[in-house]
Image 1: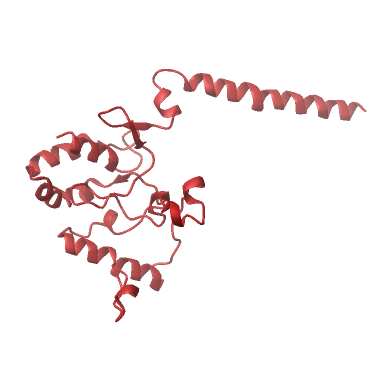
Image 2 (image 1 turned 90 degrees about the horizontal axis):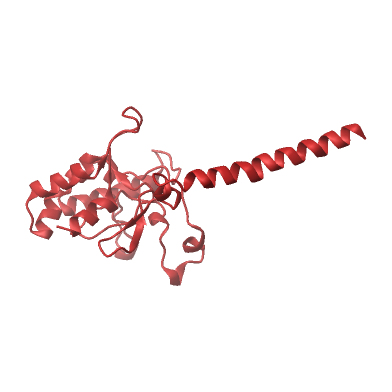
Length: 208
């Protein structure tokens, strides 16, 4: 009986600690002014105050007037509502393709395929970049591990300057300044690499 009482007491104490006190403390800390935005999902708003996305999740951009994001195996978890049989819009999808470097499917996605039937042809990332006159920088060819990465390398953004400048009819130097302003440095100055948040960059582009 003593052992049963000890087990019940330990269960109740741990339940109070990890299911009540810890969540309540984390919630209280998250309400501090300097953490409020992160606690709410790091939401980004446009000039009209409307929420247009999160600084933590990428979005697909394909127009020549915008800097394009890196490829995504899940199209950044966006889907056609009429064809959303997998429920992507409801649950979201994250993850890489996990295809090996020698896998033909990966090579087809990057290099594209040629087929007598146009409907069966796959336009590879290299072909798309070549048509747009953009150098094949790594971040514009390969997907991220999560397929939701909101950042591209500064080199990938700079590779698109000429295309965006031509479509927007703006000076390339202005775009270079925007890229610098929207580049996030390494975490604590040592972890990771510099990255440009594509959504923030394109919002700054619209404000020109």
